[in-house]
Image (tube, rainbow, N blue to C red; front, side, top):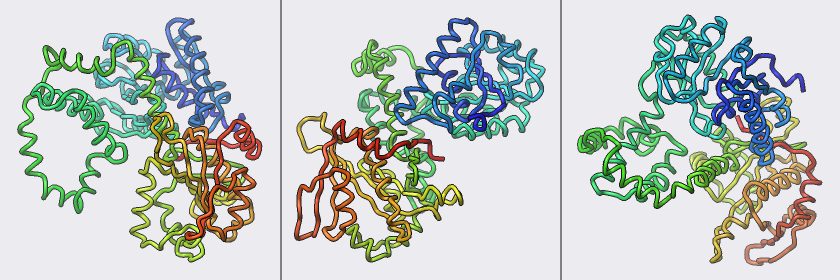
Length: 511
């Protein structure tokens, strides 16, 4: 275990949700983390809650970093002594309340304790770093590292320098954020609201105008985002969206710049969120989510973030002999070569595609809510070469069947499992067996499936025998398509059998 730990120390000032999230992220890669707060009981409570959070996240298969929950928690300690927290730290992440007077007082204290090489980063979403660092001796070390709540599930971090922040501290902060698995963006200079809030405020301002002008209800405005723009921007930013919606960005500008400018001119002055419109918006929102239901709705929101991690876009599953990774564009050329095989076309009932069509297929699979795809790596080969393309041997999929019943609780209960070992040299090594078991268990524990089906050609004796050994039973033969269907209800004893067959496996973030 010691080889996984780092000697470097990180200090977290403030033990609330944001502070605990930062602590877990840094501990996830082995940094020695000290959480500071002003009252000993608060510190102890924070440590207790951090342990519970790590254990719960590990049970859900969502633990980030390279260490177990127990190993991560062993990296975390707490103190109510600011000097003890900061001494020896290479990085300090401040997470105190959003009051400028509190921050100024804290940074004055920190200035007298910190050494010349420690990065001093604020989690503030409100204040430019110059506002609380101007009079500091160590002001060149101060910057903002603004996370998005909840930072454990939303990886963006905005790195914002003060006018006097030295570039080497900004660069090192970005390096640290990348190391702990966050997605940093670096502003060239400080600006009010940074980037995320400026974009967020632009959206809020226009939605406010639409309510004030009686164009849309609050509920319908939120549908515009949740069922429209939000779905688009979950995968692409606004600029790449425009680039793809025409023949490149210059073509988009040629087509739409006049329209965009003309519509923007009608948007009117920036509204103040107060008065009768504020009361109307609040009334409609409280009809949607009553005040006493806010904690419940927040929990639902956080669960939605968890679901995005449970799907395979951001994770890898590590078994004894195989590693399952998401299907990305870098894998397409090898996959395309595989699918030129007439044998594989016959076994998978597939038609040959052009390389352009293959890229389109890969993109559609990644964005399809009803399809969960992993590629299969030979673990030994990958660990020797660190080359995913060389280690690729096949793929496995779950097609989530639509609900055809009246009972909405039955939604997403049936998954059709598929497995393909494409590399001839990889067959007979039980890669397909282990990959299928991993996928079946993943579907049960993280996609909440309740029943599996499998369909194979009646000539594919290897697949038929494998599903029979996995305790599936034959349910149908279709002579015209030469297919045999198998089914398997998900029961506790079968789940226990899956786990006993697999032994140990790990779910980790995918780089």
